Length: 56
Image (cartoon, rainbow, N blue to C red; front, side):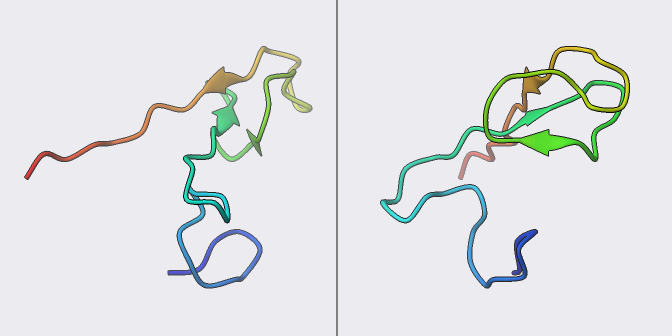
């Protein structure tokens, strides 16, 4: 799998194996940030993206 930077690996984790938070705009899901803020397209607050967790 490749992440947005083109590197192989899981883009949900940092180098230390910790989960990385991703914030996105509810109207523009293509907008992604690593911290809360405003959407550059519409000015709405970015919200923390919920991860899909599958149970085994």
